[in-house]
Length: 311
Image 1 (cartoon, rainbow, N blue to C red):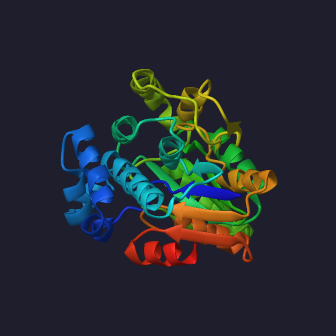
Image 2: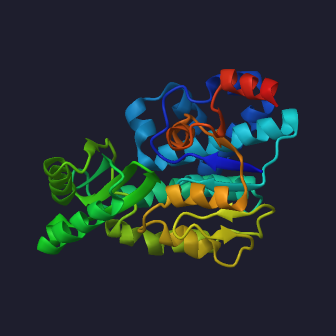
Image 3: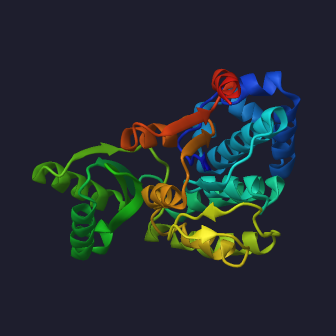
């Protein structure tokens, strides 16, 4: 069984998708659809920058989704690519929904553009922060976040992502995140790496985004997925359209349980994993946890040709 994975924000870079755009008409058509859906040349921003503008959440999210779906369409068109179950990390859940036929591409591009805009507006620049913590002591870090947050409202922080067996992300007010990072270091729980992000995602500080995104999603037609999807909040297997909007809204303020998603896919019986997007972020993490697994990625022309030859 094949598990299709879509990466989230942070994998964008200037020049993303340019080779594939220049070589394949089907990729070009997807990019043109994205430009039309959000009303400006996203493709030009992806190819030419500037980097600081592409990195803005409102631009990075639709850019990543566009390239992810363009690669999926290219594989379908060229080698009859298909999958058994899909999932996406945070914003990548929208890519998974498009790939599974539950959401139209143009609707998804517009939605994540607004999602990024609302997230950027929710917390003033410089107030929030995120940090990666390289540790397998997830419960201990959860307790640290609770203890620090209990001291003061200004120290609020929480786990934002359970990414891998030895990687979690903490998000919240900058003072709280830095305090937890310091405690992790002092107690020998693991290594911490500050993340260069524009907002503290997947925590309670994103609460203002929920009502705005609810209005956007209510105007979008969400259909029964043609293939199952594993969603981010509870790692539930989604086979109908009934709770998709709720899941997409809940993941704005709740942790992304990517590690649990992977474990769920293995439990279901997946034995091949393939990541589509700008960079091989998820597949690299997966390789560290499951060294002998059949893990693949398509992110550019070279990896496309390599995967095509393999299958």
